[in-house]
Image 1 (cartoon, rainbow, N blue to C red):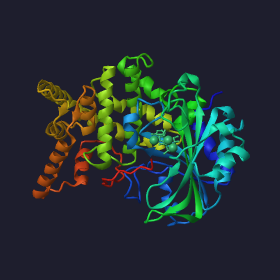
Image 2: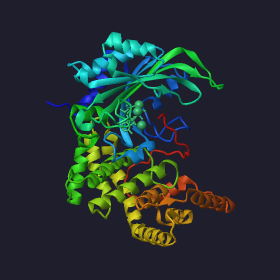
Image 3: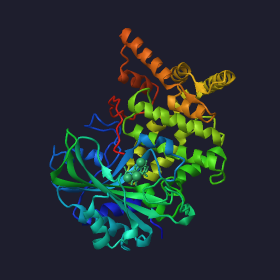
Image 4: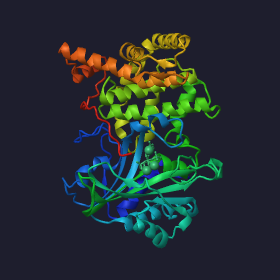
Length: 471
Ligand code: ATP
Ligand code: MG
Ligand code: MG
Ligand code: MG
């Protein structure tokens, strides 16, 4: 019997529990004590307090399955087999305890032992940093990976500026020749931009301090930070073409099939729409569950943008009315075992989503008409640049996130006038400042909340403007 996603998640936690790790719960997607981060974007993001030494954990070995949001991957979603905006990262961590040897050997044991996942060893390949002879040696001599499947890659160095940094090693699964066998393809190697060698697990060895003067000195206490995408390993286990046919997404897609009367797997264009919708509904549902709300700034803007992007793709399935909110039922039941919060806040989440969908639909047609008109008149002038003021009007009056307008017009061969748009945005900020009408974000949320009639509680929200990822 094939493993289900919830079993894989549990196996990971159990495996590292056996290796004396303490299990940390999956924390809120909204960072609790980290103003540099818009969203929790990896397993380590919730453990920074241990990594930077602010807090010494009782047990230096930690394992978690952490819900994560990455906005830098939005454009990939629906087009690659492996990228999501919301995904779960499975990670084991060592705070000054074990180091490379254990991290590598345990990762291998988990993936290849028949008692655990049981992958065929011949299907796995790894990358290391060219100067990390230690990791190379462990893979080659301790684990026994053949030299031709240990690839040295310059990018395998984890560095986010000042602070802990170090080389990493990544594990890839070879999905076979049907995913690419063109030996002239310069990207066809583990770590290249291809769909054949699927990156499943990243092991980071933080062993240096990146000093303010850009020199590196060895850390007295070395840490291990790893992350494996649950959706990806499940797709290999369940042998699906992309992550979207796994049990983590399938029921969402099936519900969308029912709503749209379109069958999944018939056309690439429509499949992309199914995937975008399935991805974005998970992100928005979980984020609202963790206290974020659609708005024009910070985290709220990300939600607004994701919902509107999904609605745009839904047009390819002939869906022209609010529907995303219905899919929350599926998200809630798929994730119930490990994340009961979506189920518990289901009514509230659906209400927020439905209101946001309705609001967008009200202005969508008008906005689209403007888009068409502007493109037509620019074309007549022989221009393929979409004016910044129009991007701003669409944003400000019709609720079209800039990125959405961009995607629309790029499909027609246009580019947008970025500086022109920024100029309008700045003007608006100046106007707002002059009028001293500081729009308090909490006030905006209050307005949203007042339209919602459920007993669910709003669990807090901070306003932030910075988005950083560890990518
Ligand atoms: P990729 O090269 O495929 O974009 P990455 O190198 O950016 O992945 P890491 O930062 O190394 O990813 O994250 C650790 C692991 O988390 C990855 O090996 C992958 O399994 C998973 N992961 C990262 N980004 C995503 C995403 N957008 N969607 C799903 N899983 C992801
Ligand atoms: Mg990568
Ligand atoms: Mg990686
Ligand atoms: Mg990436």
